[in-house]
Image 1: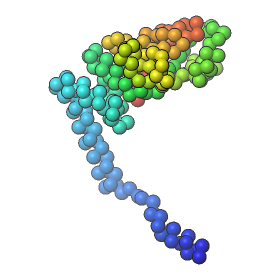
Image 2: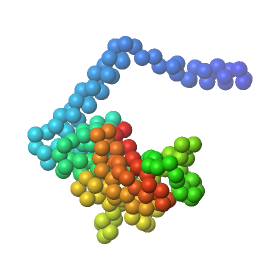
Image 3: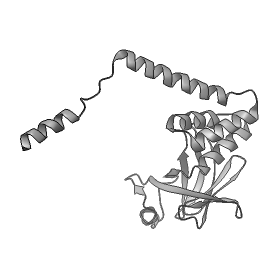
Image 4: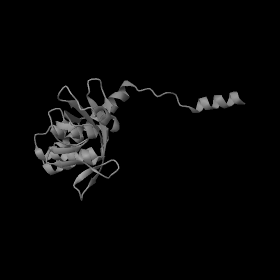
Length: 198
C-alpha cells in the first residue's frame, strides 16, 4: 500500500522544467521590449508625463521598473526630476542603508555603543552601516516618519535631504547616485552616504 502511494505521488510531481534556447530568447526579447516601453515613458517629450511615469514606476513598479526609473532620475541634471525621484523613493517607505565613515582618526568613546544601539554594524576600521526603515509621509509636519510613524526622520527641500540618524545631517546627491554629506554622529565628524541607485 505504501509503495503504491509513493508511486502515485511520484507520478503527480511534474518533472523539472527545462528552458530551451528558443524559450529563453523569446522571454529575453519580451522583457527587453517591455523595459524599452518603460524607457520610452521616462523619455516622454512632455515633462509632466515623464515625471508621472517615473513616480509611478518607483512607487508601484516591479524591481526592474523601479531600478530603471531611479537610475534615470538620480543622474538627471534637472532639479525637478531629481526632487521628484527623491520624493518617490521616500514615499515607497524604503529600507535605507546609512554608511558612516569617520573623517578623523579619533572617534568619540560612545561611537561604537551608538552604532550598537541603532542595530548597526561596526567594522574594525570604525566605519559603520545602519539600516533605517522610512515610514509614512506626515503632511502636517512635512516630513517622512520613522518606521513606527512617530518621529520625523527625513525632510526634503528641492534636492537637499535632511536625514536624522543620531543627529540631523544635510545630504545631497553625488555622481554615483548616493545621498552624501558631512555629518556629526555620536559627537564624531563623519562622512555619511546613503546609496539610492539599486
